[in-house]
Image (cartoon, rainbow, N blue to C red; front, side, top):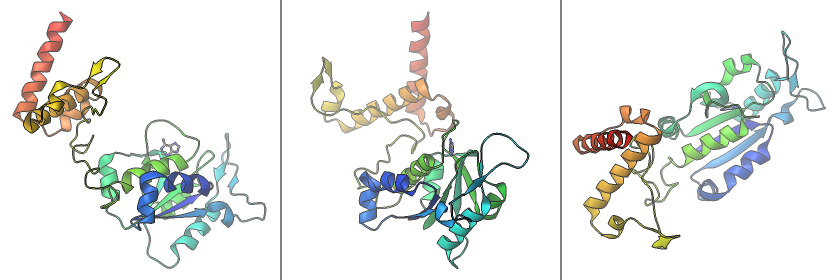
Length: 248
Ligand code: ADE
């Protein structure tokens, strides 16, 4: 996967990307990052890239020409790339979209700042508009890193076989079960007995039930889309009955 990020803060993107798993994958050649500093393509020698909004209002708007020049320099005479503009006005990012984006060979991400970006450049170059959630950040760099991280770990080879859990939260539509490691007792809390039993089928059932319990408690809406079998439904209705009797 090749990432190209158009940004006013390339150091932030480079720092965030070069650490940990994504950094290691880049060293192995599985991922690459190229940052293009939009300010290098400013129209004046002072490096201005923003201006007052037409129609008035607070804040400044990023101008189209510097972004277009940065984009053209990056694309060269290649074909039109998939370009994500990160914005709270976009489609909300989730695991499904991360998995889909990971199939691309190349992704461009445009990070905005100030009060936004001239709509005309977005119409011209953005193929996708993506939000990382219903809150507003000061700029697009953190959302870009979030998207790059989630996409990178879905690229084959980036995670080791053991790491690339099919068990993971969201991959099966449920939240992940709790995990434990040594010591066996921590602050009087022992590890659940069943996890030490060596009985794989019982452990798998226990984990599945813990996933169901967690999901029902904090993200009940996920259960509507999840792939549930007879045993799952039975466990959930038992849970329901227990809750009802506790509430009485
Ligand atoms: N830019 C500012 N806030 C954002 C958000 N929530 N998602 C994506 N881009 C953003």
